[in-house]
Each structure stands twice: as C-alpha cells, then as structure tokens.
Image 1 (tube, rainbow, N blue to C red):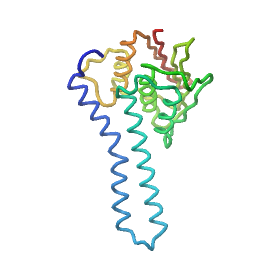
Image 2 (image 1 turned 30 degrees about the horizontal axis):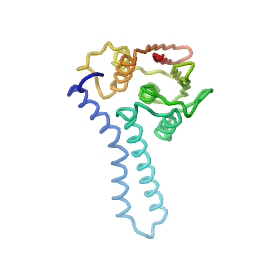
Image 3 (image 1 turned 120 degrees about the vertical axis):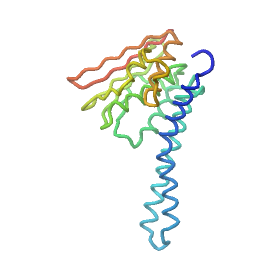
Image 4 (image 1 turned 90 degrees about the vertical axis):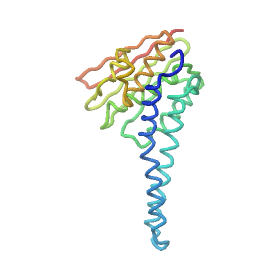
Length: 214
C-alpha cells in the first residue's frame, strides 16, 4: 500500500472503528447513569450494573487493542502468542469458538502476517453470525502458510467481501464491512504472497489460505 491512504479509505476505516466501538462505550455510559439512579440499598441491582459496566469496559479495551494491530502500523511485527491473546480477548463473549492447531510456536514473529491473521479472523467471524468453530493453522519458519477453516451451520458471504479479498473491488466501492478483506488483499499483494478462498455447502465450510513469500 504505497503512498498516502486515499481519503475514501480513511473515511471507511474510521466508520468501521466508530461503529464497533460505539456499542460497548454506550453501554458503559448507560450503566453509569443507571448506577447513579440506583439506591445504595439495592445491592443486587448495583452489582448487576457494575458487572455491565465492567464487561463493556473490557469489550471496548479488547476492541481498541485488536484494531490497533489489525489496522495500524503496530501490526507489522508481532508474535503468534500476542496475536492469539488479542484474538481470544476480542472474541471472549462471541458465539465463535476458536481452535489453534498444533504446532503453535508462540514466539514465532509474524511480520505482515499479524495483520492478515487478525483481519482474516474478523472477516470469518462475520461469515458466521450464529457462531461456529474456526480452526487456525499458523505459519512457521519452514511452512509460511496461514490457514483458517470455518465450520458453521450456514456460511454468509456478505456483498463485496470476496471481491475485496481477490482485489476485484474498486476502492470507491469498499465499505466498512469489506475493509478488513481489502486490507488482507493489499498486504498479501505487497508481500507478493498468494491467497486462496474455498467455500463448500456440504459440510458448510469456508477456507482461507494465505501463502507468504519467504
């Protein structure tokens, strides 16, 4: 992604961040207002409100940390262990279950692969709104391949996501929903890697495989 980001890309990325952060932040605000209105004698209600505030704060923090790496320059060089921690915190209360396949080398440093991994998990989670099981096979020194396989009752490929992944979507048609896919395409292209997508209906599976140039 040479040169400055086009204005349109900056706008849709901002829209995506604001959309995903407004919910937990609003919940914190609502919880604080309810807490102020609750009598000190109603301990049970107060405990429930404090739990809401705490959970919402954790969600907001997890999302900010995740997006800082997925969308920012800091994602250029992180370990597999750090990437895993960010993903697991982000999806802690999600219906999506994640399985990390062996071998998993937690100290292995992902260069561009860190951002690809986080954005790929983000995209696949949106393909399974009712939840599912996501198998992740991470790259290592002798096998520079990242593989994600999603198993769920029904795969939903939102409009424009596959086109963005394959680099067939014009920049002006990129939306907040498709921006993670567009980022994956741009990074893979910049690193001279290869990307493969495969979807099957029986069983209902979606596979994304990225081979990085050594």
